[in-house]
Amino acid sequence: MEKVKITQVKSKNGSTDRQIATLASLGLRRMHQTVEREVNDVTKGMIEKIRHLVKIEEVVEKVKATKPRTSRAKKIVETQETAPAVEAQDIAPETENAVSEAEKAIEA
Image 1 (cartoon, one colour):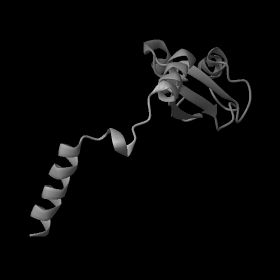
Image 2: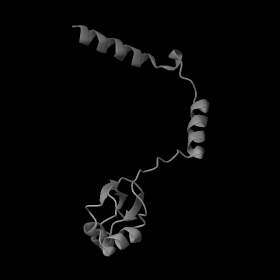
Image 3: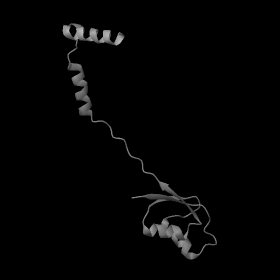
Image 4: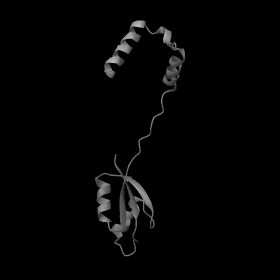
C-alpha cells in the first residue's frame, strides 16, 4: 500500500476540539513530529480536516537488491577453471587459410 509522512508544522493552539482529536488520532502530539501512515479513505479524510496544520510527503519504498546465489556463482567459477585451454596448434589449417583469404579480401 501507499504510505505518506505526516508532519505537524503549525501549533494546535486555537484549533477546534475536533481538529486536536484528529491530530491525536493520527499520532501527532507535538510540533515537527512526523508519523508514517498508510493511505486509505479514513486517513485521507483526517488529513483533509487538518491540512492547514500539517505537511504531507509521499513515502517511496526502496526495493532491496538481491544477492546472487552462491551455489550458481561457485558453478560458474568451477566451469571456468575446468575448461580446457585452446592453443594455436589446435586450430585447423583450413581455418587459418580462410582467415588469411578474408584479410586479403578486406585489403583489396
